[in-house]
Image (cartoon, rainbow, N blue to C red; front, side, top):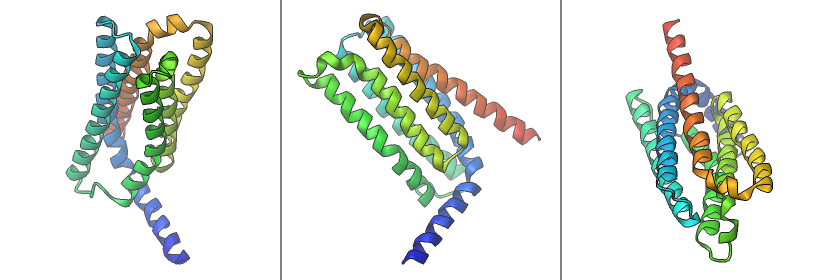
Length: 206
């Protein structure tokens, strides 16, 4: 039993190393799509002044669902193009690493958004999303490129800074929360996607 378990894990590690280039190619379009979606949502929320916690929560929760679904569709298309199985053991490991923090962030933000007794703390929703998303990226990074862990740390550090800003000025934070989400889930994702795309092109040219 233990021998089979060790052999399975070694096979997963070997497969992950072999597919690192594939995962890197899939990450670039995913990051660009998520970034574009984050920029559009941040701009829409700011322009339409969706500043009530429930309007804010519904807008970004809907955006998160669209982002996750499309990310999996993009990854699936990349795997099929490369003639690789999509729902492989390594893919399941990455998904299992992502699920706990993403589920925790989703449930906690949903409670703060929709529960009448917790709505006074709704201003913490963007911090929760940024923090838990950073934790999810960091966890998935143990099965992917090292850069994704560093990208996760950017979100974690950003959430810690935002917590300090909330303590100083809760009202200002609430007013600019769409812009903050647009920066973290829009600008940073587009920047990382462009970086992945350019570095991949340089590798292919070499």
